[in-house]
Image (cartoon, rainbow over the protein chains, first blue to last red):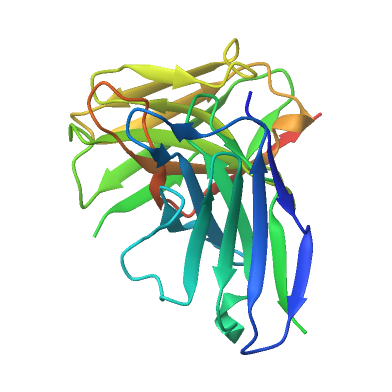
Length: 113
Length: 124
C-alpha cells in the first residue's frame, strides 16, 4: 500500500497569514504516461463530510476559493492557503488515487492562532 | 444537485453483519463516468477507503477488508449497498457513500461528492 504522511499534525495560523500543509507519499504517484500526479486534497469541517478542494495535485475544484492552491510532484506535495480565513478551520487530508487501495494521510488540523 | 443518503442500523452486535444502503438522487448511478465508493471514519480518526463499484457491478475492494465486504449496486432503485461481516468494535465508524470520477480503462480517480455519512456502532 502507498503510505501517505502529512505534516504537521496540527497547525495554528493567524488570520490573513499563510498556512502550509505537507503530504508525502511512500512511492511516487506521478503517472509517467500522462504526467499527472494522482493526488487530491480534502477539507473536513467538524460534523461535515470531506469536501474536495484540489485534484491532480494542483487543479482547484470548481467553487473553491483561489486562496487554496496545491503544488508538488512525485512524492512530495503541499497545500497552501494564502490568506487564512476563519472559515478555513478544518482538518485537511491528502489522498492518493494512483493505485488501490486508495490511501489517505492522517490529517492536519488547522486552527486560528 | 447530487445527493447521497446513507442509511442503516446505527447499532450492530459484534460478530454480526453490518448492512448499509446509499440512495443516489439528482444524478444517475448508471453514468459511465463515475464509480461509487464507501469510505469510513472511526470517531475522531482519519479516513479509510472500503471499496468502490461501477454500475456494471465491477468492484474494487480494500484488501484489508476484502474477505468481509460485499458492495453491490441496484440501478433500478438508484442505490448502493455495503455489507461488512463479522464486525468488531474496530468497525465502529461513520460510513460515507461517495461519488468517484472515472475514465474508461483507468482506475477510478478522486471522490468529488460525499454523503453526510451514517454512524455505526458495534456493541459487544
